[in-house]
Amino acid sequence: MKPTEISIDKKLGLLIIQWIDNHHSEIPFGLVRAACPCAACRGGHENMRAMPDPKVFDQPLPEGAKAEIKDIEMVGSYAISFLWGDGHHFGIYHWDYLRALCPCSECRK
Image (cartoon, rainbow, N blue to C red; front, side, top):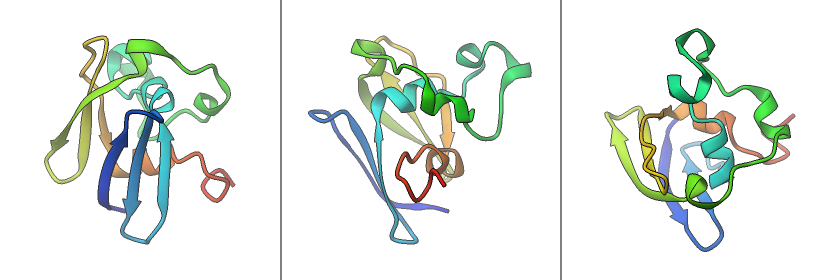
């Protein structure tokens, strides 16, 4: 699954992705940050997963600088990474991982 367009709406705090299958995802910045796949955020390499922990949808989401996307960078042709307002920049979010973060009712079935 690949995106055809990626943008951010800083005013609404949303990562917006249009997918090749015409699905549209609007993922709150706080959810993207709460699901950061880096070893530091997961508590070590032994806790890293190929997909987001489903519990991320039920926990309080970070706010403020920690959940503010400052910049997006492509990682090859398979992922993106973010520079967060608090300086964090270690997570690499591959396309399947981001699609699994879509909070819409269709994806949360």
